[in-house]
Length: 101
Length: 101
DNA sequence: ATCGCTTATCGTCGGTTACCGATATGCATC
DNA sequence: GATGCATATCGGTAACCGACGATAAGCGAT
Image 1 (cartoon, rainbow over the protein chains, first blue to last red):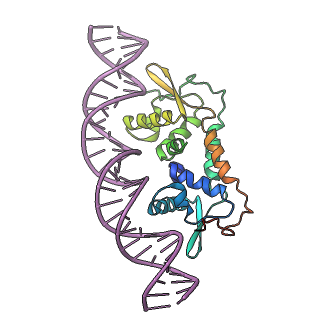
Image 2 (cartoon, helix red, strand yellow):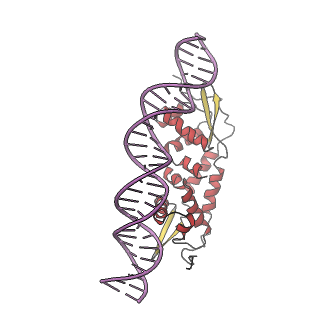
Image 3 (spheres, chains in turn red, brown, green, purple):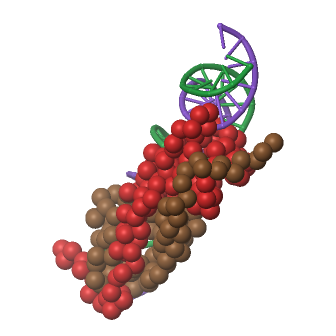
């Protein structure tokens, strides 16, 4: 889970994801041009995203077609919502449940 | 934005956030016991989370009361949804919009 | 003013990450 | 089987991150 969040924790990878989301079809090596990094670096980022299960690559020789994995980020979204939906009634520092030595 | 995602990209920090979400009141140094790391390390994680704007600390001498910042993760949630809501109709590799030399 | 409690900061060390150029791989074509 | 294209992998370097112990800082109580 943390790995998935970590995958999003880099500007270049976010750019790649946004690019994949905005592109109707799918793009091959244009990602390299888009992010402005070396081909090997982009390939590494793609590998990280793929390992995190966020994207998937479909081979279409000689290129590889990358696309977002639908619903892959759902768990992360659920976690965020779980964190966000706190009862605001729970005021701060009312009854600190400290371990009472 | 990437910084916020990066803040979530560590098991210890996720544990802290979950802990803050589950705790009705707020806790002080119990976080240290909960995550099982050194006090300095936890303090560092708290600083990162605070810098990312995910949590906030309210001073209640001699301790500090940490709590989640309501709605702070909303932008990240929006981003994820933006990525998740892709038209699944957009098939892969139908018309790769490559730059045609 | 001193002590005790809690948190923040500092210095350091080891592991990981990001980046690059160069090179290897895989496949279709000729 | 050699060539060309797109991607993956390798080797190396610089920067960052995470962890720790030690130490400083802030404040209430004595």
